[in-house]
Amino acid sequence: MTVVSHMTEREAFADIVKIISSLTYGKERWFKNNGCWYDRSNGDYIQNEELVKRISEILKEEIDL
Image 1: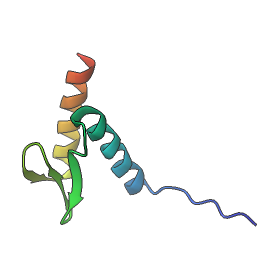
Image 2: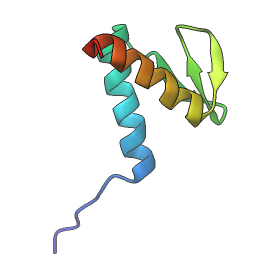
Image 3: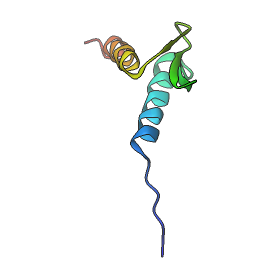
């Protein structure tokens, strides 16, 4: 019997953040640290809501929306 492992939502979200930050910043800009996300560009710790806001702003700039 083959066991198929699936990503959790948390793992998928973290991977999406890594991919976006690597493609737009050149390396991981945001990473989990002490229960929060650390923003390497701004040098601060942020919650999920602020992370989503910053990712949205970066993607809007990249896509020229």
